Image 1 (cartoon, rainbow, N blue to C red):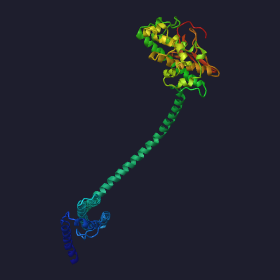
Image 2 (image 1 turned 90 degrees about the vertical axis):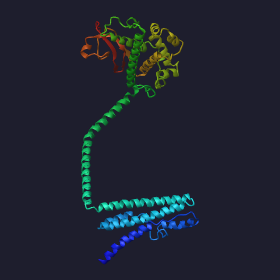
Image 3 (image 1 turned 60 degrees about the vertical axis):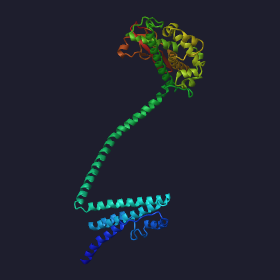
Image 4 (image 1 turned 60 degrees about the horizontal axis):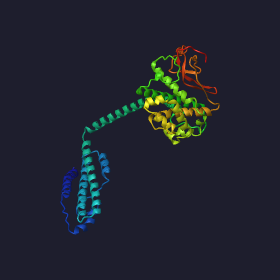
Length: 438
């Protein structure tokens, strides 16, 4: 009992002595002797004795050991006392570091100032850690703290169980969606194959460097038919603006054709341009010599201007003078400047002529490949009044199968081709006329 009493009496006095020693004020002057004391102050900062506190030592890495030491104690009072001792040590070290920082400023020494600042910041951080540790010790000493801690542990365990259940649910959903993903990937692969096969239909993708094929010819046929349709639609738009009467035009279409709708006359215009562009051409204008060069350009007019006097250039000039009559051009533009420019060997850079060149390029390419196939592609037309046969004909516009048998051919919109045993059906407009055998 006496030893315990003596220790209890000694502890307050020891703390008071430490606090009073820490609170001592040491002046820092500018005399030359200050510089001589700097090594002594530095030694103090590193844990050696000094006049600022011979019994004080700073241990920057003992915070965690102190905390584990406190946790190992059964008495919260002893743990609190140990933390206070270390906190007082840290405060003493903080005072020494501050004195060293002041000494580094007189005289001014950048290197010493940087070292002193880093040391001061380190000790200040250590002091802050000890302060947090002291607050935690006070909290741990609370009798209700274990219950609070157990409650938080239980909440986290419940959250972990919920997250695990959610993970299991997501795994199940992934298992259900996996077959669907595999099916989508399979369809994507099929689409990629189809896209690769139809790549020849893109601008500037037709080449004959590796030879020609029936598939290439069929792709060119579809592209040619679409371009002829687009140009016919473009001409009809110009006719409406200029007031040119399509009914009184010079299109060589049988006048006995009965149109189901008034708007179906556009197929007669389309048939006219298909006939002009694909029939009656000169053999020397159709060649594969410059085929790859002409088809490599994205813009057909740029392909034409790369060599205006090529086979393709001469084909464009010859077909323009036939396809666009003088009356049509005069009605559209009020003059014959286009015709005069083309007859002089030029190619006018106008919207109308550029549309014509786009149509002409695919028609020229179709004829060039048709001549180069083995066996050679043979073109065929169907005369007006012939009975419709779906083996060789395709209705434009499309009709029901039962209706097609009640009609006969009014005129051929787009000629068909036969390549060996392969037949590309011609596109015809059906009309109510007397039927004849094909």
